[in-house]
Image 1 (cartoon, one colour):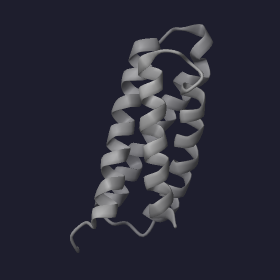
Image 2 (cartoon, rainbow, N blue to C red; image 1 turned 90 degrees about the horizontal axis):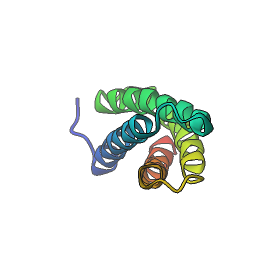
Image 3 (cartoon, rainbow, N blue to C red; image 1 turned 180 degrees about the horizontal axis):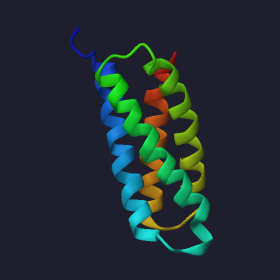
Image 4 (cartoon, rainbow, N blue to C red; image 1 turned 45 degrees about the vertical axis):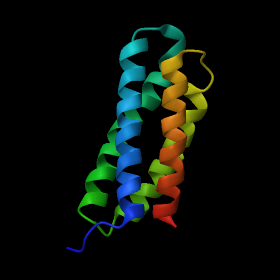
Length: 108
């Protein structure tokens, strides 16, 4: 297996940052009834970004397609989290946007 390119490593790092931010957002606001969609997006982001990291690290032939879906999901999560004033929601939205951009590059 060849060494990871800097672009690939950046995508892994951005996915991991997104996972962490989504987990913090989820933990902070769990049970708040007005944030059900936010919770679901955060859970989905954690799951898909985790898969994305694993496929990117192994340089799977499927990582490009998973990155494309991950970019779409992270954008949707960012849009949802950005609706809330909470600092952790805003941080999650920012990390999701960064992940969206990295995944778009990997999917291209």
